[in-house]
Length: 136
Image 1: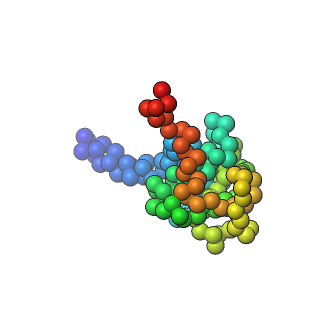
Image 2: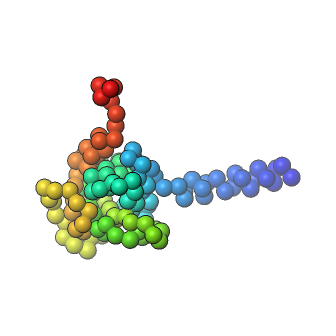
Image 3: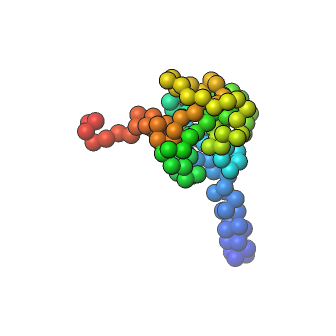
């Protein structure tokens, strides 16, 4: 009986690990939608900088993106693709998936599909959440 319970527990562990969303340094959750497309769930009153931070951290940590790689806003802030009742923005590393032409902007937003930032630029927004010893 104990052996059967152990087998049942161990067989469900890989599925549980896959279902877990990535949590960025700013506590925003990122959910993979496909190989290079992912959704950042809006929460904690975070704005555009927070969403781009989470997207960049996910791109680096989970997808192996380099600092020079581009992140594209595939779908602007709106209803979540992965769960009802949530708000999110969908990002991609593949510009071929965009429905709008890619563009760069001086201001950071999650309102216009196609906006792009280098991973290295977007990851700088995460520094807002890192406390350093000199800050105390």
